[in-house]
Image 1 (cartoon, rainbow, N blue to C red):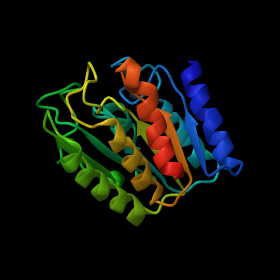
Image 2 (cartoon, one colour; image 1 turned 90 degrees about the vertical axis):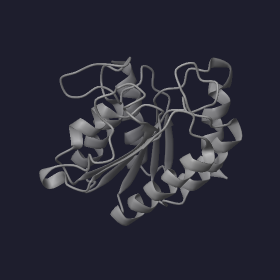
Image 3 (cartoon, helix red, strand yellow; image 1 turned 180 degrees about the horizontal axis):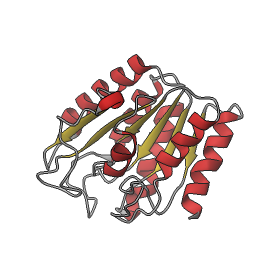
Image 4 (cartoon, helix red, strand yellow; image 1 turned 90 degrees about the horizontal axis):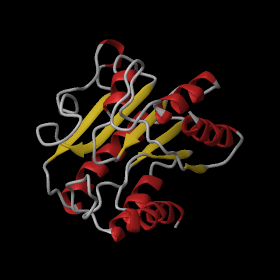
Length: 213
């Protein structure tokens, strides 16, 4: 799957001293777990990149999943581990795929207890509400103090995305990028969902612009 190779190339560049990278991956990966494909995902690009960092000198990796859908595959892979902190902002499982995971009471188990943080939100959520969850996630990531931050960058939170149900606007993505920059760690963006074809490029670029501003 060449998509995971794009993520691994990004990881290699971060290891070689780049402070930020965007891996333009298709298909996305965050619904795939070790033995399960789903939601257009076959290999979990972000999880593979996270393990690569850990295998090559990193002690702690954080994953921030801002796709409209819960990153159930990523959560499952790292659920019992403390070397990866996973946090996801998504439509609540009562309303949206993948339905079975993504509840707020899923906080990790065994060694991974308290290293999993979900922010499920209702259909129709706008940026005012959504950004509060982002701020809480970012504060938790700062406390965790990872060696590298991976961002599962889905822009299907956009108002008008054919498979989404949130109400974020293109300008909001600039602010999202600015907020993510405040973590202050090497940051590796990996593309997940986003299906409003006309606006997809603008929304992704706005996140990166905000991050670099």
